[in-house]
Image (cartoon, rainbow, N blue to C red; front, side, top):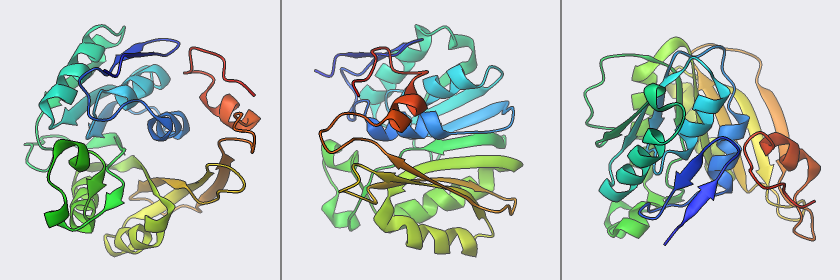
Length: 237
């Protein structure tokens, strides 16, 4: 049982969800920036935590959150319905590659499965929630290219090891990486994750560095400040 994860302004039920609230979603939701987005899309929404964070950050945004896994979708829908932004959040039980989109989006986010495998190596639910293929990631980037508005932003969190591959794919698609947030689990464990902002507009890329924990496992001041609007309990330094 995953239990509930309490934030300052909402609660995430995750009893059914394949993946629970973790540092990756917390980082992505806290880092995301966008200029007054009106229509958002959460690809692979899981329990809906990212959409809820975005609804808190952006007062005008309406978000469609697409989740294929039935049980995770049920958590997502429940979390939306009991939040104070229920009228701005829509949970959709579908494969986002097969969904019939009729709009373009100002803000798209995704916290995709991390571990790259061949298709034959991915079979059970708990594996599929954490594993993907480069082909699926390429399909995701192609989908984003099709759905992103002219001035929209796409934010994604990935293992640092995938950065160069994604950079080349983004370049081939005629997209641009506008922000690069490099994440160290600790200073002694660099290059854990990377959070990227991708758009159709070329801008000088901002490069930002974050360290999550000190060597004694306490949270760094920068991580505490980054996530302070969301964490219900004060993080220990």
